[in-house]
Length: 177
Image (cartoon, rainbow, N blue to C red; front, side, top):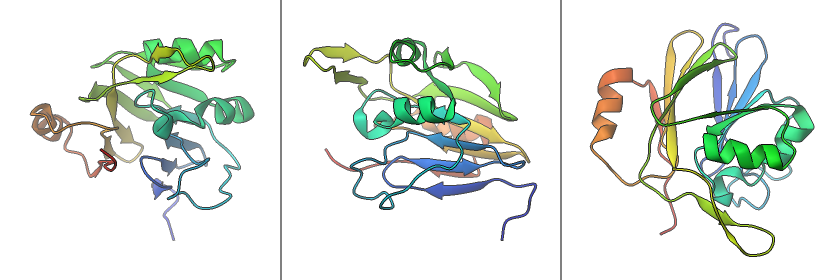
């Protein structure tokens, strides 16, 4: 059982992490449920208030647009990717750049570097740039700190992330090539 003043984190496959916050708000990082072989079959969000997207690969954002529209969730991602989300009809976005910090749902969210690509093909097969790849350091209510790296190669700034934010938990999605 969870204490009502703490957050609950649930891994939903690959890089998708659900965060249940004190007070009932729900956030998700890198929502990919549809077609994700590791996701619970038929999983649905009954509520979703915040979506964080690390980069523009489908295995990190495939369900971001439909979930944001269905739940009127705020989407936080790179400035470039938030512009694309807005063009897809997402009503609430808050773009940022590496090193930026913003507050949402009582969380302090800092976008940090990741060494990876970030793009996708549109409906016509054209390559679309999704902004730089990133990770997030999220200080949850109650001072629990999560580092979600998105997809990244190992790089020396990871040591600095550890020194500066002292994360209690690191989510390091790995797999594929």
